[in-house]
Image 1 (cartoon, rainbow, N blue to C red):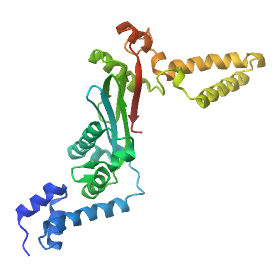
Image 2 (cartoon, one colour):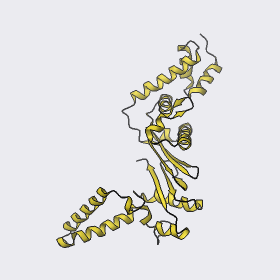
Image 3 (tube, one colour):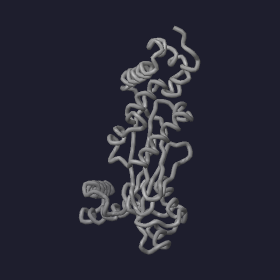
Image 4 (spheres, rainbow, N blue to C red):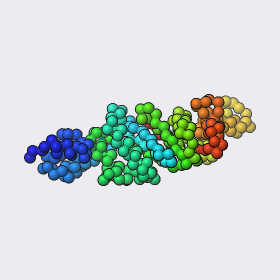
Length: 271
């Protein structure tokens, strides 16, 4: 049977599939639009299954905030060519908008959340069929706080989000979001470092002291000194504030407002 260009365009608009894929699906469905949509979706799932063992190391990392909540999402693909495609970025933005609007508990919950009439997971499978590469929701995180800010590094490979106990000037909050991007802290403050990480750092410190030939009675003291340096490098509030170089992030925040503090942050990067 003859398939019109208008029918093909209607199916393309509904599925984002290629023109020829839409035409072939309509021919196979004998002109039945709903059946043609199902054919396109099944094709996407089949391609997704075939490419399940591929590495999706490229992608698009984005963040967004409404001032009180912030989310970070990474949608991964196989090649940088796809990662820079406007359609791929737009799809990532749709998932990001959904995440901010619904604030799912975790990545699995976001995948199960409905976007229009299908789940995010189903959309990703369909887009795999359209694009021809493995797509994967590699990361999702959220921060809910008195005030929030985000930072997306140019190129969409790194994004951060940070929450504060109160809302302050937007530039102040963004400065901290940029600090997180640049210095990659693992926790807000000393108290947030897990006990096993602290013990591991102390063991490393003792081992280095022994290797350097220091007296055994000094190992613990030397290890503690190295641990303090670890705190300065790995905890956000104790890091040197990069935009100043002379004060810590804690001192920077207290200079703005004595009661200002960071409640949590997210950082995700590709590679």
